[in-house]
Image (cartoon, rainbow, N blue to C red; front, top):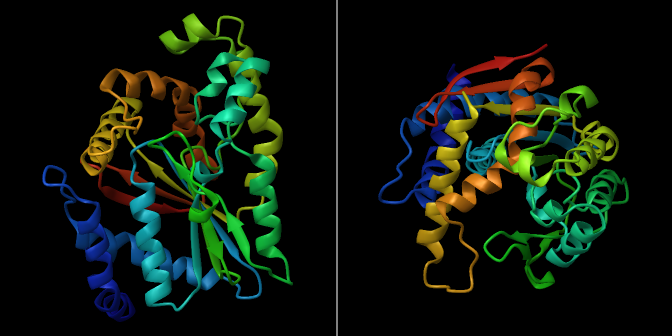
Length: 308
């Protein structure tokens, strides 16, 4: 307990400063100190014991849209860096989306719905595998890693890419479908929403996405050392949180008229592409994730389950 308190005293200022930077006048974080002290600091002690300075320790962080992955991974980074003196690099699977041009080509070759970023198959898997491989290399060399601009639905210019100069002790790899597994072909047949019923009647899109999970993404995720899952109660709640996210994006960037900010209908349609995998993760992730953070309806961590 004394160690936890010492850690909290050291990281409190930086953590709270970051949280405030994520708030808007309407959307304020509640029980900030409890989240840091009761859940994130114990998690960081757990990670620090496992981190091996000879090679990066890969932490997968998964959760449906709007669960707070970016906020939580940023706070984990602050704690591990400030108190444990570990070199931490944080990246989202979203940064590895294929370019809009590449997705347009994919949509013409395979299925029109693959123009929409998000599902497995719309990321540059070879780039991710190369990043994992190079990060583990004993003779580490500086790495340039892409960053994705959701507001324009394309990659940032290379000048704005991450410049990783030294080998990290911990790499936090976060994303909505991180750790997701493929489903059986029998369950693929049943449509789960209006989008699948109208736009994927022949199951081409579903089968393609599932095949990506089965092979390439399985290979990628097998390299993670642990997997943390932020578990929301249901899909409707995720839609509500995702709408809140879009509102924040709009507030931050409303002066720029070129940005592709989504309307409420756009968000709901967009999230239908995520629904199948997200619902499978609700059901299956608690069976194989290393740690489950259960979230309540107010967007807060209410309990943590550590697996052996």
